Image 1 (tube, one colour):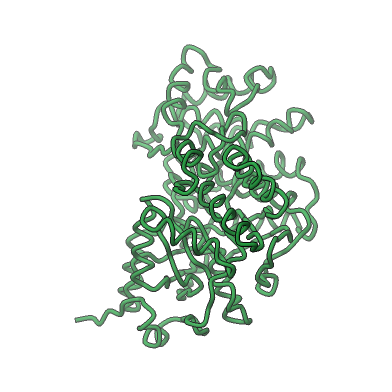
Image 2 (tube, rainbow, N blue to C red):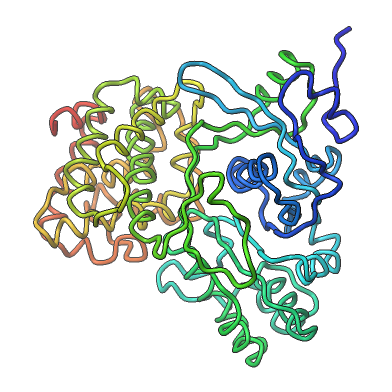
Length: 494
């Protein structure tokens, strides 16, 4: 019978004979960062950078306490508690090389639905210098049409009436900051690591909107004392699968309840704007800059939009993964044409970045055969992604008389995707989107009103009124419905 070793602190010495384990003494670490939203990306990115800093430099004041605020966070809480915060990061290289290592930077985890006071205590503790966030776009609680804070949320209504009984990130942040202010402690930095444009600015705007309704003097203190650095984060991190658990068990005899897989590439660009100190992340490759916006725009419009281009067109064609799209030369050529002819001309200069090399690296990363990022994951929540990743490029090209055909085909394909829900082989597509009902309803009217889908102003603004775009869109959407062969349309444009 195979000897399986459970991943936990007590077994680290034994595990260290199999794969790399933390070289630092985890018992000597102090929590300096409280992180809300411990998903795969946080564990492949910020927690990895923190681990790397602890491995090579003295950083005992900066370990992480993970926080889950929702019932849905119970599984990761239970797994990490059982494993003493340890997990395996499996880095998968394009050449087939696989590098697993055990990450030790998360030393505690608290679940808000069970331990409200414990969460507030650690956030209000004088040792906590940063509260970081990966809460997804939906966690920021803004109206996608207006960009303003959504006060109609029942949990927000509850928190406004019951400041000591928080439920959302805003309730917890304001309650913890109030405790710090009342105790005469310095504010912590609020650092968004979410994949949204101007993430620090968004976090600041939303928190202040909430705090002003709940406690105006506290809001004024937050406005003056709390820093919200913008950051650009990047590492492709697919959803963990049972095969990742099996790989560790079968190859090494390691039992890890929730490992994380990722690509070797990693990038983090952060504005150097902190309230109360920060780790020396620059020692492990993080780039600190005065203004992150050019880097952020480059990444969102090339990597994130590029992912959506491959995902939506690939889904209709029947490709299941992003690397499968990149094994199809039509998709490779189309993607590069989109990046070269539509995105690059509207990007501002990004210091220290060779744009052609960056695009080359994106193609290599998308093609990594070991990552196998599903097109359904990339297409999920497209209603939140395309208005930020793709449509601004299209709008700027309309204003500047640039090419719009590559982006327009993606939008036409997205309409078909939501209406038919099938690929070219008749296989059902997994459509995951908070707006799926509205998207399908609008797309289904296309046969009688070809512009119905793009009349959704919350997504497309006034694009339906633009003659150049609407005529091209109608032509493309009609061809997709008539022929159903997205690849032929792609080829006709190259």
